[in-house]
Structures are given as C-alpha cells and as structure tokens.
Length: 429
Ligand SMILES: Cc1ncc(C[n+]2csc(CCOP(=O)(O)OP(=O)(O)O)c2C)c(N)n1
Ligand SMILES: [Mg+2]
Image 1 (cartoon, rainbow, N blue to C red):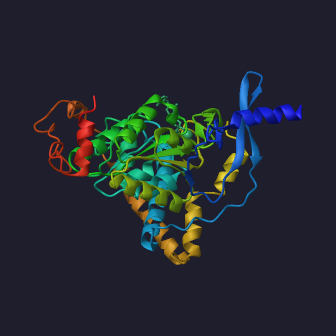
Image 2: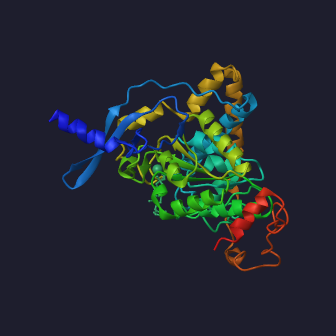
C-alpha cells in the first residue's frame, strides 16, 4: 500500500523530460499573502453569542475579559502641542454630549440625540489629520469630528434644539448638516454608506481642479454591509481617489452584535478585495487613530488612492437616547469602561509630563467654561419664525453659484499627473 502511494506522488510531481532531467509537471497550488497593518497593542479575545430564551433573545460574551489595559502607543507624528489639542477636543466632545443629554431631558431638544461616548478618540484624532482645505463627511456619532472641523458646541446644540441660528436654521433637528463654504463638511443623510461615493466625488472634483486631496468619512460595522459602501470605495480605488474610510467597529449596529453582521475576522480585511491598504487600530487610542489617519491622508495627497481603517472600540450607550442598551451584556461595558479613550490619553499625557495635574485642571475648567457659555447662548437663542420656513428652499439671487475651491478645471491640459488621472476619470462611462 505504502509503495503504491509513493508511486502516485512521483507521477504527479515529477517526470523525466526528453533531456533526461526531472522536471516538475504539476506544482502544488501557490498561496497569495496579503498584509493588514495592525497598530493595536492588545487584541480583544472574545465573541458574542446569541442565546434564545422562549420568544426572546439575549447575548452572552464568550472569551477573556480579564486582560489589563495596555498603554497608549507612542505616536510617530504627534508632538506635545498636538496631543494636548486632541485631548481638549475629546473633552469638549464628551462634555458637549453630556450637555445635550441634559438639554434633552429638560425637553429642549426637538429630535433624538446620538452619542459617541467611547468613540471620542476615533472622531477627534481622525479629523485632526485633515488639512483645513480638505473634506470630511461625518456620521451621527462624529460630533467630535465636527468640532475639530470648526463647528462650535453652540452650533451643534442649536442644531439639536432646531434654533433659528443653527446650521440648518431650524429646518432639521439632527445630524443632517454641513458647511461647504468654510468648514468643508459634507452634510450627511441617514442612508448608511451614501457618504462614501459622495466623498469620492469630492476628491474627484478636487482632482479635476488639479489637486489630490484627502477626504475622510466613516461607516459603522452595520452600515459597511450596504451595497453603496462597496460601490463607493471600489470607485475610489479604481480612480485612486483619496478617500480615507474609517470603519467604526463599535461592536453593535442597533441591537445586532458585530459577530452576527459579518464573517471576516477583521473588517479591515475587506480592503484586500478593493486592492487598497487595510489598517486596524484600537479606536480608544488617540495616537493610533491619528497615526493611521495621517498616513492614509498622506497617501491620498500623493494621489495613491483610498485607505480603509478599521477602528475597534465600543458604543458605550444605546443606539440613541431612547435606547437603554439592555441587550448589551454588562461585562462588556465594564471591559470597555476600563479603556475609556479620554482617561487613557489623560494618563498618557500625565505620565509623559506633557500635562501637569494643575495644567489638566485648568484645561478642564476652560472646556467647562466654553461649554457653559455656548449652552447659555444656544438655549436663549430664538426659534425660527414661521415666515422663514420657505426661505432657502428655492434659488435666491446668486445662491446657486458654486465657486471652484481649488482653481480652474485642468482636465484637458494634460500637464500634471493629477490631471491625467482626471482625464481617465472624465472618460469613464
Ligand atoms: C441603508 C440603511 N439601512 C438602514 C438604516 C437604519 N439604521 C440607522 S442606524 C443603523 C445601525 C447602524 O449601525 P452601525 O453601522 O454599526 O453604526 P453605529 O450606530 O454603531 O455607529 C441602522 C440599521 C439606514 N439609516 N440606512
Ligand atoms: Mg456599530
């Protein structure tokens, strides 16, 4: 029997050629390997299991929730001043959301409120990597990104209270606002994933004006399953458009755990199928988030195309203010509470002596003061008048004139590499 097997092997893999040498006729199948850069200093090792109980379901955590919290990874790029700025943005982000929660409970907020609790590092440190003349497309939890891009807490609080002075002048009481004049923020709509092709379009528009820019947007672990996510990112990939896509894997999409949303181990693996770089970061570590975002933005500015960054973290509240998140196993909250992004960065800065306890106290007091002043102003500002409802709906004098951001379209000059790529884009049917 053994003899027979060895004979078969010889026949399959080697045969005498006419010149007497033994040549391989059937090589074993080759394997391709791909690289996903993983910045994390710890890799959480647990999953969520659905347990059926009568008509209902509940979730249980399986795995190890005991590891101690790792340090923050030293940034390759951030200096002391920049780290402190990001820390301040994160504090402002958190405290503004707390103020919004209170305003909601006082009946002053007209719509719902969505929180980015636990995700402040991802929002603030990512947007911090963009240059002022680049573009951002925020999702509902990215209030921190909006602050970094130039919206004030007052703007955001007025928006949720539907005040006349809010970015949408009281026409919307949620996250559907942006600013294409100054802050370069594309207003999101609720349909998940739709920002991705829109931001790709912004990058294409800039290229048609001779510039390769970075454009950043976000999608959740749930939203990334949509078809438009694939379409948008694939278009950006084939056109080398500088989309920096953060997949905010916060473990939940409404009440569906990420483990029931996709089969891949890490969502960054999706990058392989687009032919673009995929990166994993700990979304509660501001330095990791910034470094990955910075490298992706630099790549975008060189005209090398999109990057997909998966930020792993946890949605520390329910989907929105009405959702008490009873379906989330308590030990999961405890695990991630120990990894609070603000506390982690604070400890890091104190440990490095980039922040003294006194300096920290002053910084926190400054944030409180700014917020209180903005809250006061927002609460006391007027609601829109009924007559104003029709304004801004139809074209008024000159309102339809959209000025070019970067210059005259260079699609046909054929001089720069950016414009050559534009021609390819323009001729796409
Ligand atoms: C295309 C589409 N499908 C469904 C919804 C309804 N919806 C709004 S938020 C949400 C959950 C999103 O979860 P995830 O993408 O993980 O983001 P997270 O809320 O966790 O930040 C769903 C299903 C939607 N807005 N758009
Ligand atoms: Mg989610």
